[in-house]
Length: 197
Image: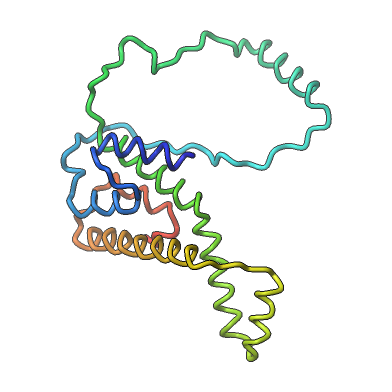
């Protein structure tokens, strides 16, 4: 869901109909579209991971009641404001480069997470390692069947496409980096390990 919302937001910001964040980002870099947007002094802030292992709570109602009581004692319940509904916001304000890069980063990360690209990469590496380390390839094939791996042609095409587009993006980043043309705001993508930056 995060990927789809991010993609719609980026399509709206960049006025594009492309439906792949990797292609959008590659085009953004190849065409040096960052030059079309204003620089910003605001630093890109990243939120914590969304899916943290929850606490084991036996009595949920008692836990929530205690938490609520603590919040009331700390006067945590202040007046809530919703900036989207605030009258001082300019509706036609142009986005700055930081907000666009941040949106692309979040969307790319969500895309890679939605397709579990990192997990699939690790599985493929372990399977490749097993097949090169084992003398008997029949035993490896038997292990794969025993674990009930099911790989369809659509699956292979999808992941091959993702990896090919990812490789193009990686080469684009490295080319800009080697020519010292990569803007500093784009260094946030170094946090994504699959790009290998």
